[in-house]
Length: 388
Image 1 (tube, rainbow, N blue to C red):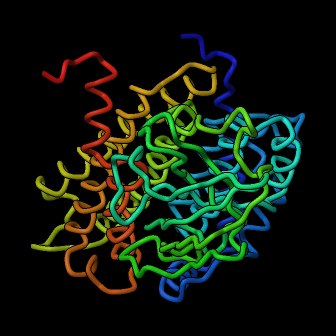
Image 2 (cartoon, one colour):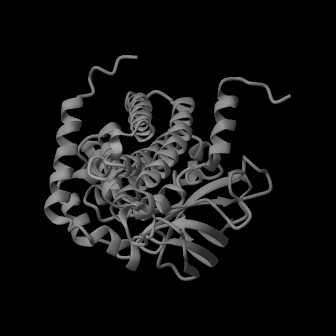
Image 3 (cartoon, rainbow, N blue to C red):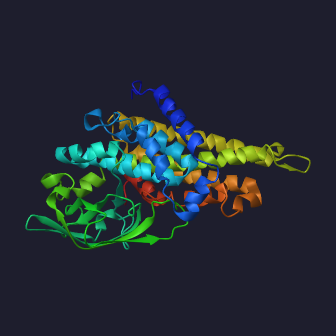
């Protein structure tokens, strides 16, 4: 594997640029306020767009900065360190919009939508999960029927992040009775007649991009909104399980990595200032070892994400590596955040504190984007382990 063409210095410049922007424009109490009041920080997001960061997943021919998956994941990590109210809308644009339309759309759809993504003017929500369908994605019940040159959608989706602010719902639908063969993906406008969106109160990811329930009641759409066009009809499973899935796992892992980095930073600094039994708590061996272990685990997490991201950038399938990264990083990040909370003691349990918010957010990520159990199944299967 030759990844020499990927410029680590360029990615560091992007990290530094994002950090400076957040330092200059995000006040100390802003993330807590965005979380408590479900605020979408539009002004900050517009500044990110002005830097061209939404174009990091889009080739220059479609108005992007050039496809650079490791750089885009670095942006996700940096934003997640500050607030998921920033990271989630960015993911909805650069990843849900950029990656999926580039991988699965027709050339006409790429020309129409990708320049809008690059300018931060198009957000997609990922409409897969249903009330009775989680890990068994191919069992979706939301139905699409073609009628007189139109597509009519009926059904429901659940736990759809950001549907309330999305321009389109990137929706997996059933088109017939064959489980894997009769699946398609349709772009459903949020404002289309027959679309109903309701907020789900979630413990985490509470910024302006809500977790939502969706219902589709005779939603009548142009066939031009079938992802992949005529050739994309009944190819939904192939699209869902393609290279875009690898990158989706990695953006969830990068989000978890950002949360864990922020939590460990706070615990590390707290340990250097908090005194108990006449000494700084970082001098107590139990705390000292816990912090050392967390730094080691965080480095391992970062290396796993980076390795899989570079594979994806080089055009290699990384279904095993991305599943491993999603599994390992989300699980270890969860433990890092919980251990960081333990170091802060009661201060880590104060409602409205950074640590309390980080704990609520991290608990979701081993479930989001394919649960840890599903990732273990994927890893075993991709490595050829027989089921019986």
